Image (tube, rainbow, N blue to C red):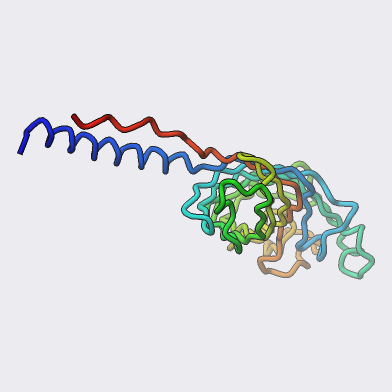
Length: 238
């Protein structure tokens, strides 16, 4: 066998393998969202319209295939809750309120129910999707009626949600997303929780000791697909 031919064949195979991996590495999606944030928990059993605030997201997704993406999110939201919104005996007697900021970093999977962007020449691709992640969040306190609150509440979090997205150009997608971020093993992110310390005011010992805090987000999303990388031609075999 001609040594030059063998050498060129091996080089060509290695080059093809490298370029295949290089192109696959371009299947990344970068995006973000802005919308309304809301809270429900010990202070507000349901999100109240007067307590809606702003929330933003930034995310990166790796496209494993047309149905499954691996995504990592950074979510920041301003949240507030107040007993004064609810005309019930406990909120009236306690009259608690708080404001905080949630900064949450999480990673997990996103599942497209339809084969999204299967046809590169199709401009009206659309799919609903579901996602679930595991992360960690910080909840810096802006203000609270609780005496001696935690210095910097934090929690392991479980973000999950649904949404839809529509392809609007070769690279861009537009959509909407509804998500819930659930703090796990903690009921202190809003600073309103049961405290067994005898010195704690009685009105602060009336909350239910459970994982009741939930942080909601509803907003618009935009995504940029880093795809369609053109491979240079393989070297000729001489």
